[in-house]
Image (cartoon, rainbow, N blue to C red):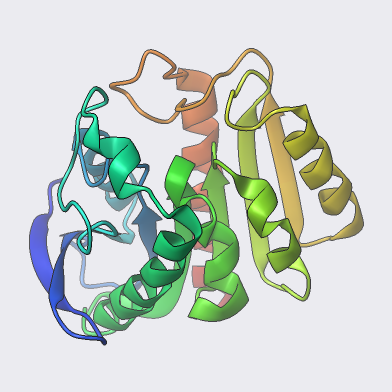
Length: 234
């Protein structure tokens, strides 16, 4: 299953690209918005979107870097670091894009009104920020980076949040895993999964760190969470 690129009007002016895949069926389905890694909306992100859409969900992948350096970048492109900074401000600006993307999903006939954020690497924080204040029903974080900056944002969150890392992820050292392990132990709505021997970027087929078992587990949890949202509204 393949989607198409659309343009989404930004609330503050301008417009950004978004890859959208909708089910072939007319049945209304839950949606998932993928917050990409620093590479942007590249072939790895499109593959994940197509894979989730094949299970009958509405999937969107917005270009969260359109204000700086738009479009996908290769892993060797020196501009990757440039467009990520200043990181906290960039993530904050992207909150509006995630809201605008959710609003755009509301115009899709197959969308049932319930959406999950699935964030990767750089986009990992949106798995927390989405349920926190952006209108999303749940969040999934796959090998998120610099996540200690967002640990406090989980306070007061009641929606389901799923975090998945490998224990050899150089962007999630032991203090990150321990901090989230402690929080997950005290919050029933937060689940943490740590895979042994798995490195950063395990979801990306084009990465040397790609791990099939961790990838398949992450897709399975995403499906289960999305199916739960569909069941909740009948």
